[in-house]
Image 1: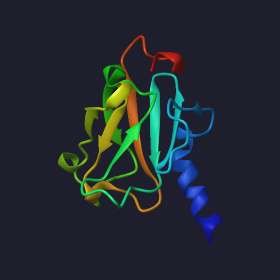
Image 2: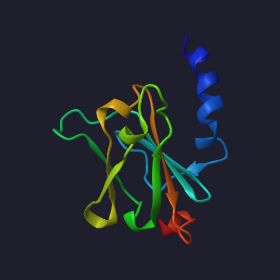
Image 3: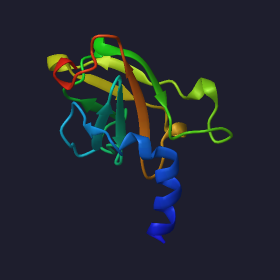
Length: 126
């Protein structure tokens, strides 16, 4: 059954892992990040349940480097354009704290594509 799910997932989201490198944040309890060129993909596999407001802290990703964000694992009709807003805030030590609405979280892998501003393409600059 798992293999039946992998093929369609790879066709739709394979670009977020194939040819990508480990992202700015080392693997965390919530998931992983990958990057390629001017894009970082945040794969949230487990949302924290012990917090009133569920958010994840992305170490190594400076909020100043972010040009735009988009939840790519959520598509209509399950979610609507105005519900796919990613809320970001600056965390301690130059980290980025990300929060999403419950409605757009994927049960298996919530994928947020983070586009970087020009000049922040290398991992060491994030």
